Image 1: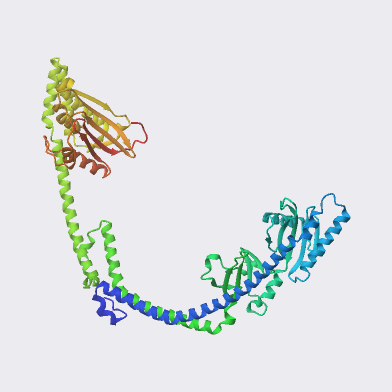
Image 2: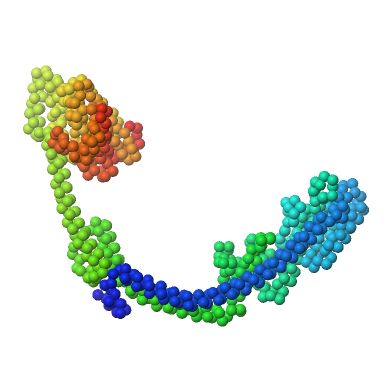
Length: 592
């Protein structure tokens, strides 16, 4: 037996399994809990919580300042859109207005816009488009394509008078507030569209003023709308690679960006739905905490490895014998019981704990099972052979057949055809019974035996016996054990026909189930009570004959084809009895 690498655990080898498991788990839990609680909890809580608190507070203040300014500019756009003078000037423009008058009106509108935005350092320009598609401008002119202009007008129309925010793009780097100007001065108060207001905002200037003097001024703030980056305007989105939504934990995540580790914090805007991110570099702000965290992490890993080494060696006393027992069970699963007999005792089975006792008990159990299986198999073979020979011996052998041949020739010579047919049928039954060449015959050959038996019985019972047979040619090619159907016909005559005064109908028919052919032998005799039917099914009912009947037939079918096949018996008092023989169907699809 190999010596343990930790001899001080040797006294524990014979402990009970529950004591071993409890000791091992307790040891690991105590060590891991002490290291985790007094080291990592301290470092992680101080480091991550303070960093998150600081960056979150700063990000909240910055986002609040930015959105407050955007809300103010939105209110300014509402004031311009509802200005009574601008409304009156826009209402005065129509298709009949002379060109010089249109120019004068647009000049008045531009002057009014300048009054609103002259001192607004974040407003890049303000445009008012009238019903005729012409513009009045205050501020710097922004040249955009017709498609861009059409998109702005369509987007403003979706707001139905409310403001719509249009994000910067490659063609126009400004943030746009667009809204329809609707008239409220007409008598019907119809709020018809009389123009469109477009306010272009320098978002970069707003952000720079809000974060001025903070750590976010060093390019460590990002604003995004969905997957689209809004600020900084010239940031390479492909190089940023912000985390996916499912990566965030408690509002922050640690990730490598452009080769440097960053602490990322995000908050979600409730006003515009934007997401604000702060990126704080690890290596420039918290060098000492990072160093302490790494030292503690290395110490924790080293302690954990030491604990695991002890635990693995200690657990071998549990896993090795169990794995050996599993291997023996797999051998038994394959049907190999002999391997349990010749194996010498090994160190595993010498242990005095539960696993060692289980090994010894399993070994003795397998030896007993192997002996019982061998003994039972030999007995079953003897019983089956005896029963089958007894069934074949129900009809007297050879010398009777020769005698019947002589009677047959004598009947023909004396002109007795009925006697001749009966003797020929009886001779065929004797020949089939004597033949031991094959245990399985075709359904067609079995039906020939049945017809010979029926021929004999018809001479006996005459018009009281009515017989019908409906078996397709395809079914006649299937195989079944010899002398399967004839005993069933004999039972129908004994227990049905002989008990009746009126004619008795005995019928053989077939039907199919998936992969199975069912041959049904049924009669319209008196049937059986439920109690007697259950006794017959269990093989407990007393029979008139030799005692070899349905049970014998079923066992021979199971031996030949398997447990999925056999005999099914159904009967009701006054409605007759039905016996179904179930055999494999290998003929393919056909109608039965």
